[in-house]
Length: 129
Image (cartoon, rainbow, N blue to C red; front, top):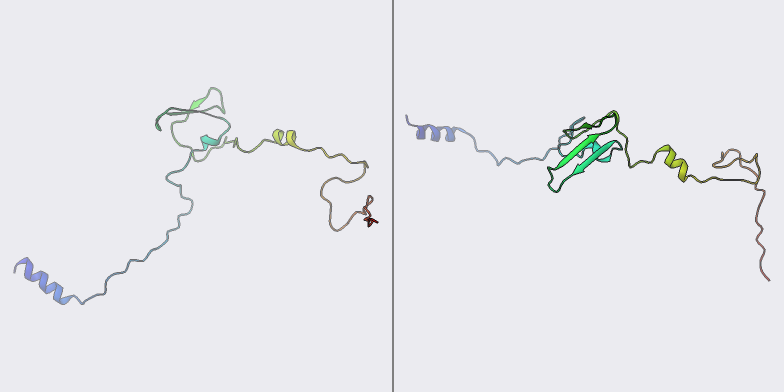
């Protein structure tokens, strides 16, 4: 027998099928790493980054320990990472407001709703004549 008669016999013995419908499915990957992610060094306080005009012209040095070390790859996790976008405690203390009260024993800030303090300086609304 040749190849063609076998193919015809095979097609005759196969029952007719409805067209296959492709279904979209979602895949969940846990603890996976994104392929195109930004390096932590771009937002790290300790990083010294030099960029050229081409995308490949980039040198990243980590200055956490002296002398600064060359980082030849994109970093996804670092034990010494310090985000330079978040203010430090000293920065927060520098911009904090100092609240002074007349009474030394009076509590400043948020109060407990269970114990409302009596209002000492209540305003009285008087209609004008």
